[in-house]
Length: 287
Image 1 (tube, rainbow, N blue to C red):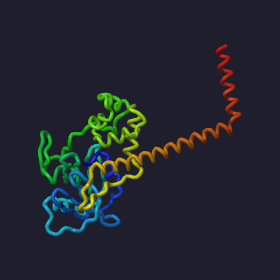
Image 2: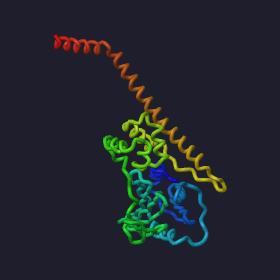
Image 3: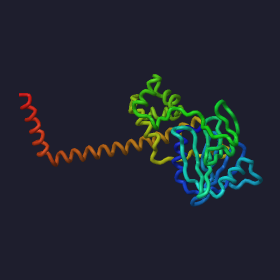
Image 4: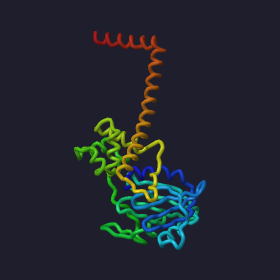
């Protein structure tokens, strides 16, 4: 399952491909393959539970109708933006040229879907059409995203504190109330210095803004993936990245503290005289 943090990594990595020209689209059942051209051809595989880059040879035969639709509307366009609404498990790819725009939306919210929209967010087509109360995925309908949870990124510390106070279990609040999911909530709490809201929010911000984002590694053919093991490996990689950022922060703090000490030493006499004057004034006031 793709977490909100996985989606964040996808967005950060794919933003490096802005300016890439749409090349082609293939579809194999519930798997969609999008090819972009920028410094060579890059093929991105999209399934209801995964997104990764992998080499792809061209498929034989006619593509399914949805793949043909994507080819029709994205032909001649370039990738101009990649966005994630808040911490939602949704990615929108804006393709455009001087005359027109189209938006490819990938929803990783179960059961998962891929939609093609026009520039006014009207649905041109979808991998799967379905309907719920208040939300219909069908050609010609205005696109309404899945119900959003609390947008942690836009909350103030007071608002975040109030949100966490609704449940005695901070990790559960992050996972459910904030909509981060269990894996991300655990990662945030592992790197938080305490359960205090300001520490938890700071930990979330460090996890959410990695220095070196990477796409998920695709599973190898014929290999049975141990999901627990893969989650553990991904978790360890994220923990290492967060710890590395924290190490750099501490090193910087140490340099600042060292320099402050050096300045005090270099100006010891001036500091001593200044403190003496303040002490004298304070004593006179008491007297």
